[in-house]
Image 1 (cartoon, rainbow, N blue to C red):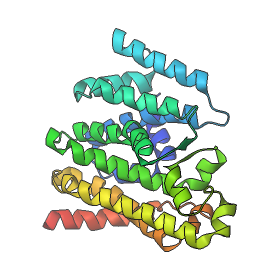
Image 2 (cartoon, rainbow, N blue to C red):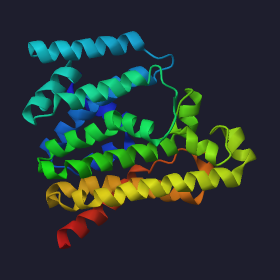
Image 3 (spheres, rainbow, N blue to C red):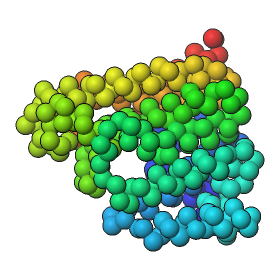
Image 4 (cartoon, helix red, strand yellow):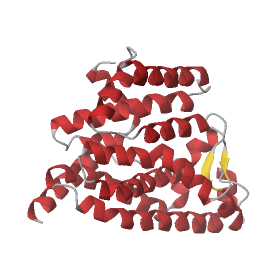
Length: 277
């Protein structure tokens, strides 16, 4: 995979993060692209229709071979391994990420918040900690990095309810869905019980906001040259949260992703704000 193809994968898989990453310094942006090329390659295997379980297992085997032998000849893995060594990623973080991706091959629902949080640790929180290491933040900020990754992932779960439903998955806590009198999060169920669905979704947005508030001190501590990109990504997730809160059924009707111009304007605003703080 060439640098251009890694960037193309990043652009295709995560419009918000890709657009926000344009406001990192070039060397940092290159490293972030390497990280996302690795995680998205793994994720694409388990999200494919039909799922590519054998290809995912081969990816994991090649990664472990690269760790043992110093390379495997597959750029998304080899480049990631170089990045992991340079920034001292914990091996447990990578193992947790691959375990979460493997879980997507068989697990369809999550009984309660503890199960959802366990999945988010591997799928998002460890990526937040890898980002913190790339940005060379002190390890005292790792808890905030975890929470930021968790909060972003939770909004993705809310935003992508319809898409996940098509794949037969639901990451949101089943006990809370049932508590609001909903049998599932299908469009038919949401439309037949709109008040219950709105109430459920708004409690989930409140949870996102609580985690985001806890993560904010970590964003505030990022050096100004690096903060604009992270602050802009956070603003875009806050924007999506507001859209879901205002019209919960919109998650079935349109893609709640910000346009690149919206991201760019937010970045300009944040650049001015950071400069004058």
